[in-house]
Image 1 (tube, rainbow, N blue to C red):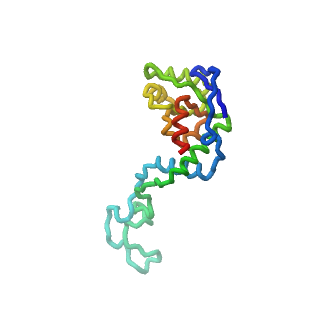
Image 2: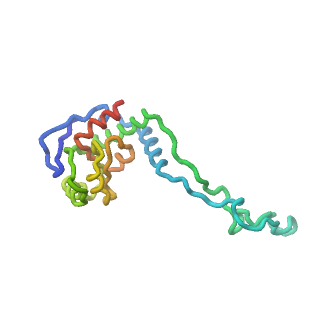
Image 3: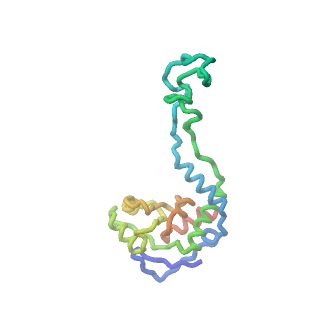
Length: 209
């Protein structure tokens, strides 16, 4: 699959690059995508939720009424979860939501996500670029030139570029990552995936193993 290479002004440079069929042309595996997205979202959860249970409530431990003869259910403590102010029954406890997936499955999921975006014409290849200084306006100009100022976009760079990254931080709908940081959720969550020409080699190397 050949794709035209654009510059940061959105103009065709007249060059084309060949996208690897092993990465951008595979048959998407829906279950692999589901598992990788599920793992990504699970890893975002802090798991620090906590509510007090019966043993953690401060209060009297005396028996609050006699066992029989009241016509109501027996009750032994004011800290019981059936009373207002009592402990919560089966409440949330701190836990780790993360789980493991094997590398081959995650690799397949990411190739599937890239293949879906490539097949839907949502993948754009541009020349490598840099900014002299971190400046939001520079990144705004790039977004407007590529007609992405009102869309969710994911920019994939070949290496860490602090000027481009810092210039993009004010935009919640745009994200800048390195080729080694590609994940299934990020690729599918974007309306357009913008890949720099220099990052293609890194993507192919990481996902063709």
